[in-house]
Length: 202
Image (cartoon, rainbow, N blue to C red; front, side, top):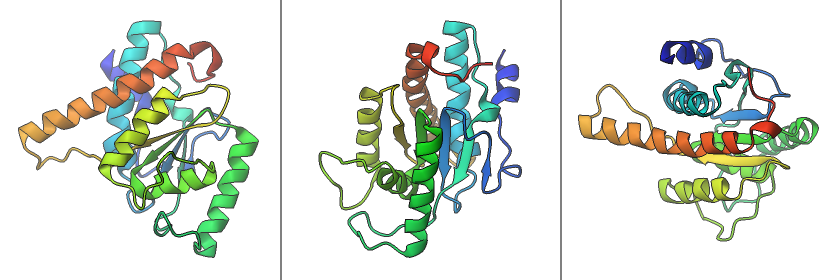
């Protein structure tokens, strides 16, 4: 089963240009073009764990080839800066239009830039507005997003840009695997809970 899952969800960095997948698919990934390998190094291990848990529970698989992947922006300025460059504003306006038109159920972001980008796209107001995004408050926002998931609207789930490299120690590698497993389990539980409302299955 694992090899089948790997064949199904694996996304080639070479094949991902500015965007790939199906905009009408309920799951979107927003990637910083400076870090195109985030899909390979962060999302793919998480998706593998999600597919594994979903299959064990539902005997179904997510059609991950249709997941919509789009390059966001590589520079949006400080979180507290409301006078953004026109290019960033145009990108926000265009994505806002796409979200309104296609109404994805879940937008997943990687790291600080795409997180702030989507926060502005969705006009999300946080209980405590950060001056900047960090590993700590991104983690807090991830937990809040999981807890407040609402299948009737577009949800945003931010992920830390935490990657496992060949040069990392065994301890760091194990911690990284544990992190991916924890994130994947929480996202998989959302998919399982809302299985009848999500058109994501093969």
